[in-house]
Image (cartoon, rainbow, N blue to C red; front, side, top):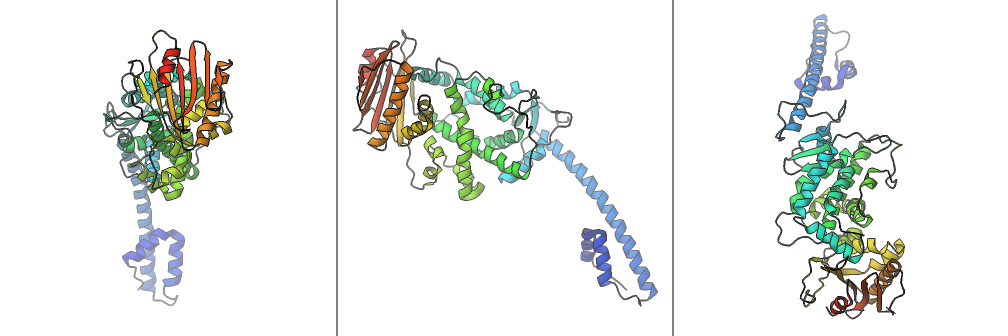
Amino acid sequence: MLKLSPAALLLLLLLGGSGLGWWISHHAESPAADPPEAEDLSRQIVLLEGQVEYLQGQVGALQDENAKLLEKLGTLGMKGVAKTEPRPSISDDPPDFVGMGLDLMKFRQLKALPIPTTSASQDAVEKAILQWLRKQQPEDEAPRFALALTALGWIDKPVDPLPLRAAVLARQLGGWYSTESGTLLVSDDKPGPGLPAPDRPLALAFGQLLREYGSTLFPENAKQPLTTDERLARESLMAGDATLTRFLFSIQNPIPQSTNDLPADDPDHPLNQVPMPVYLKELALFPFSRGFEFSQSLHSAGNFAQLNAAYSSPPTACAEVIEPERFLDPNRLPPATVDLASTEIDKTAPYWDDRLGRFAIFTALRTYNSDEEAGQGTRGWKGDRLLSYPAPEAPRDHAVWQTLWLTQEDSASFFKAMRNCLHQRYDVQPVLDTAKTFTLSARGRDVRLIINRRGLGVLLIDAATPAFAEAASRL
């Protein structure tokens, strides 16, 4: 009599009908077997067929139940949404954000529960981003930064950068992780004809990383505020990580893209509709563009484990993002500190004291230089310090900016590129123009560019009065 063990039965179920026929042909006894054994074999075949049909039904039921559990998990703990209510639809056939989030977390090798997800308007996403940004730069920190850039002449007039930055991020990401509610808000606004839809996989990837590492990179109530350079470097790690994750994930899970979408440089593109000064927009987009390349380098060096490790010791300057080999160097040194005996000038303390970093300098230089010249002018960056002082009677405040360079050749390259900027911006003949000093007077400004610190430093003064410029040159 033909007998089947439980293991054999399971194997036959997995093999299906063709596997069953193969097993019978190789293990059934010869045709000369007694009739009772043939009857037993037939009964076992009928039994197996019934079990296969039963298990197929169970698989279908489990799939339906699993889909419902994922849907409930997506709203579990979501503030303002009852657990029994379905997740709001983004369209007639909404994407499975919970399932997509699970896939992204598994791909990125993050061990955590998926983020509860809800649809929201773009305005709500923008509001959540702005709320987070205000925590990072409380009170009037961001407007003071804009005042300092205006004093340097790099933006035309003072603005509050945070609402503009929130608008750019809302359009770029299409979603945001709200630390207040613990949910991921995904924009449900439908784009106009020819306009790109929100990059929701990028929003999911960024939201997961913000939840996991946001408090590590941007701790609340920090003793010292982050410099502009430090903030951009840390943002580049997270934004680059999310962009890389979204890119690698899309290779395995292609997402249809409209061929009629506007290119990013089109004036009608959503990002270009935000009335943000060009200089500030360049800073806002740096974490995604150069951060992507930075994360690629880290991933190539050690996969996602290398990226995970970077959060415990994040990049300290944009120079490390631009040249990842600096970051990966176990003996890497922090940016040089620009020491000053005193920051007071004419008994006035600066309202802004900051390090701008290599990318901010490059962005300023390329306004009046080629990319190659601007790159050459920033290559040997070692450190810098920007101080801004009030000038109540003038349209623009005073700016004093000391930079440090690795070699005298590096400082000379920066001096040359910055001299081109000043000469073209003010469009007047200089008062003094030598290999180490460049001065001019125009539009109520006294401007001085001086190579100092034994040839390794360059001091830029853009003052509202000659008296202040003279006092600042003695710092």
